[in-house]
Length: 150
Image (cartoon, rainbow, N blue to C red; front, side, top):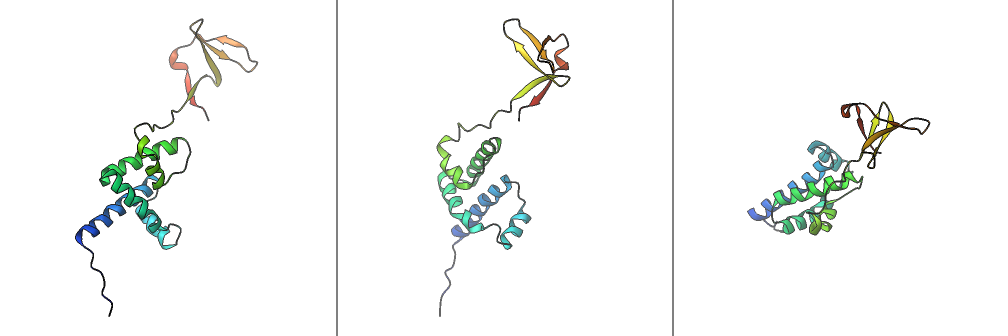
C-alpha cells in the first residue's frame, strides 16, 4: 500500500503564490485566464515549465507583489523594444530593474504632411517640401503635427 504525501498548509500557499506569478506573467503577455487554461489543455502552453522560474523569482523578490512588479517592469521594457521575454528574463535582469526603462517613442514634426526641421542657428522651424526646398514656417505651433517614427 502506497501512502500519499500530505501537503502542508505552507506548501499549498506557496503553490498558489507561484500560480499567481505564472498567471501574472501570462497576463503581461496579453492572455486571459480562460485562454491560459484552454492553451494548457491543448498542450500549447506547458504550464509546469514556468513554475520553477516563478518559484525562483518568488524566493529572490520575497513576495508575490514584488515579483509581479518586476514582471511588469521587464514586460514594458521588452515590449517597447519589440523583444520577447520570459520569467527567466526577469531573473536575469533582476539587478538592473531600476535601470530598465521603456524605449522612448520618437516623434517627428510635420506640417500638412511635409517634414519639418528646427534650425538652432536661426531659431526657426522650416518645412521641407517635395522638391527638397526649405520653406520658413510662419504658422502656429498648434499647426505642427507630431508623428511616431517607425
